[in-house]
Length: 238
View 1 (cartoon, rainbow, N blue to C red):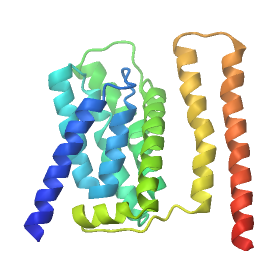
View 2 (cartoon, rainbow, N blue to C red; view 1 turned 90 degrees about the vertical axis):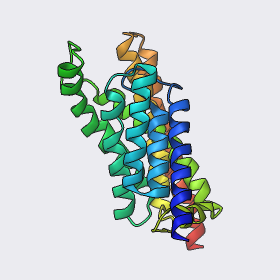
View 3 (cartoon, rainbow, N blue to C red; view 1 turned 180 degrees about the horizontal axis):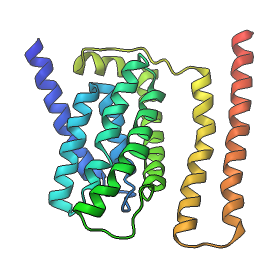
């Protein structure tokens, strides 16, 4: 039984690595690779932090060797992959915490660590300690949102527990409740805000329409979150 589980783990790990390499070019610009963060979070939830770290490391190495990606393929993945799994286990199964771990690990730690790697080892000029933070956070928010929806769907139909039972030594109930769901809805506006504002700054788009749209996204998502919370709170009390 133990040998069977280990074989299954290696098989799924290999599949996630292959998937990560194949889908990583989608939506990618330098410093932002949302689908890599999607793979990190899914692997963390299914198999734990160490397997997620191994998965992110191997994907990064393969991308560097075959696609000519600079070392941020590693610095922009390994910290978030590991913290995603750690946060998920510390929270005893809160998927939102897995996403937060990815955002903190990649969007902050990995982004800052990328500065000396890219400037000293890669010889890139004109960087600062915070240079990669906006794009890294943007990428983790996009990939994390996709992973959150995907994993919550698995949890809702009971498949997440089954996959964890087959692949991991720890099986958790989904602990994302009403407050977490409300926060996720509100966070969509923040994600859209970042997604709009970063390209606006990069391409020097001066039209005020972009800023109005980005702030409007926040207002709409917060409004929807409040309505969602009120309706579901009323249903529970009733």
